[in-house]
Structure formats: structure tokens, C-alpha cells
Amino acid sequence: MARVFIDTNVLFPFSLMDLNLSLAADYVHDLVWSERLLAEWQRVIVREGHRAPEAAERIAAHNRTGFADACVPEDRYKHLLADLAGPDSDDLHHIAAAIAGSADTLITWNLADFPADILGAHGITATPPDPYLCTLLDQQTTEVLATIRRIAARKKHPPLTPLDVLTAIGNAGAPAFSHRARQLLLDPAA
Image (tube, rainbow, N blue to C red):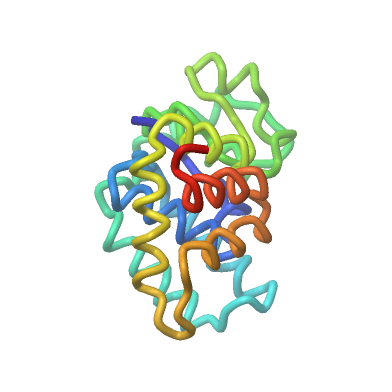
């Protein structure tokens, strides 16, 4: 099972956050996160006007509770920071947490801030969400499609079908995954 650290920039739009958290809840991949990551997400989501502070706090609290065992405390990774170099100090904290949490994949839109040589030395690969999700779909087709169906089943306001969920995921930046999953839902022999 893949062990993933998901960069802040992949946790919104919410369709990608929901998919990745649901995949973790369904034991399709194993999630690693840090309190610093979640705090950064809260700041950004409020600053960008995607959620009010109270709503962002509720979502973050839900994630803290629901995925508490996946949290890598700062005291487990802060000693690694002195040996890391990169263009963004916040991302160095993410790299250190991914290392301490034994992640094998760091999912991000911003590959430039996650040097391949540093990650590779620790057995971690950085990848954007779309190729990661496509690989996961290829490796665990039944499980990923079940997660998509489960996401759709819990959407009530408004109700969504699995195809609606995939449309949102495609629009959020994972079009190849969305297309392939749609094909498999419509024709499992595809």
C-alpha cells in the first residue's frame, strides 16, 4: 500500500481532498500528515476565501480526529531540518515530516519545491496528483472505484453520482484519472 504525504496545494479543491482522505479511510493508501501542514491548509483556505475561519477549523478538527494516527509530530522530524535544503522553508517541514513518517510518495503540484535528489535519498518520489491517482487506479481498480461510489453515496446536498464526483475531480486537476475511472465505471471491461 502506498504511503503518501499530500502537499497543502493538493488539499483544495475539496474534491481532491475528499478523494485522498476517502482513499485513506478505505485503506487504499496510507496517509501521513503533520500539524504544520494542516495549519498551513487552514491559513491558505481562509486567505483565498474558500472557507470562513470557523468552517476551516471544523474541517481541520475533523481531519485531526479522523486521521490522528497518521500525524507525524514535529518532534519526530524537526531534527531533520538542518540537513535539508530547498527553495521554500515550509516545504522543508513537509519533506522532513514525509521522511519521518516513512512516506514513499509526496503528492504535490509544485515539484520544483521538492528536490528529487533529497526525496530520492529517502526513498520518496514527488508526483502530481493526476499521475499518482492513475497509477493507484491501475493497481487497485476495484478499491478506487468503490471509494468513488462511496463518496457519491454520502453526497446529499446536492446529491451526486459517481460520474459527478469524477467530473469534479477532473475539473480539480486530475483529468486523466477522471477519464479513466469514468471509462471503468461505464464499462468495467474497458
